[in-house]
Length: 576
Ligand code: FES
Ligand code: MG
Image (spheres, rainbow, N blue to C red):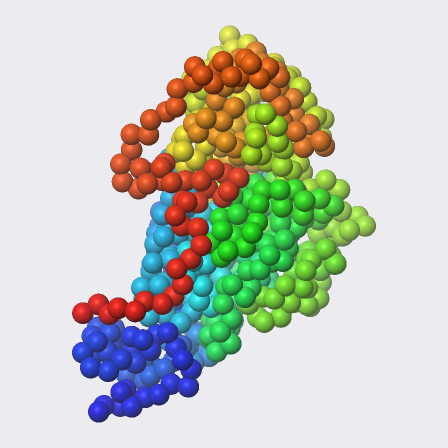
């Protein structure tokens, strides 16, 4: 009997179902790992920690992750663990067509199966660009082993002609360029001024929001959300996270211990207080579905109510993630939230409220308090009515107050091509009191629910100085976007929703205070239009076929129906 076969680890480790095996199977599991120069003692009952890496040069926001993984490894070694890094599908928000969201669920399947199939006792998720966070957390939830998130961190604040800029300026620059206030050369120069360092978008867009969501859920060490990617303290946090995950194996502190109903309520409240992305709604619903927590769209409205905007960050406010970090970051903001938060347990084994006590708010202009919030209005508002029977969402803090109650004539675009073809046509019958309606950009229809809901206004209205209009669609909007934009209309038009029946000239009323969105067309007329409506046929193959036939509607999280829940971590059969 050789040495490793004598080995009896103190802990009952999942990885020993591979590396602790006797005979042929154990030989195979160990021998091919040893070709990487790993000494025999690594296999003798050390916690094996997977480092799930979304590094890719096609995901520029995560392009520094191999370096970040090294810091995690240092921490794991220091605490007596055995780190093993592995790649998973990486979703870059900016390059992937037709939209990274189409592949969130595919990436989550990759993550889930990679974790379950491999000998790891715990996993560190390296998350950054928008979809990389939800896809990794969703996949990990369906396995449910000890898990910690390390985010990649935001870029440094962009600098252009003496001004601070970030991703939200893309939309402003686009309008300035379209109306001739910005030249082509200036437009191009601004590109490098904005993306001047490693990291994800520097505003409270979806990536920053999701980094805040994982921290608010208790899945990361305190402070994870806001440390800039290029700040050396990001590496220190990665190192500490590596140390902590080894302890979590010993404590058997799993995702289901942390992701409770209270944790999700905390996340919803924090999303309101930070002015977070509407995309958080879909991602949190999908995560809850995987871990088995009952959460629905109404919870966002209910738990956001009464939470003011505390973070003065773009697109709802003025500053950037770098400023947020220097002001104290998310823990300082959560400290200001006081009793609004549940004392839910986090990855460090302590309640989130207790963690927050150790932080300080250094700048009340950037992080407000409950007495003096940045804006009393915050959070995701859920509107319902005959135009959205299952609900639609609007981010009130990023909307124009005077448009939150608005009745207008619909100007309808049947799909994104129709919108592009006609929006700037001088003959288009539209003024600022109209409501722009975009169909066929939902989960099934596009497919993948792209971020086109904050459609640019017609040039002729921009030239008149119009800054905002009510816009309604079944799509999403970038977390960096703003305006009075009603999103995620469910059911979507391609699934037979009333949105698909709206015609030019119909009147629509949005009333955010009363949570309503109604199309002023009689039931009889709608029944007639419905009878004449033709359902689209989805002639897709491969993953897109799977997606279009199984994706749930946005009010349920747009996960694939068969991915809800989890299959646990046990695998009973060997490979040879
Ligand atoms: Fe990656 Fe914005 S594009 S975070
Ligand atoms: Mg995005």
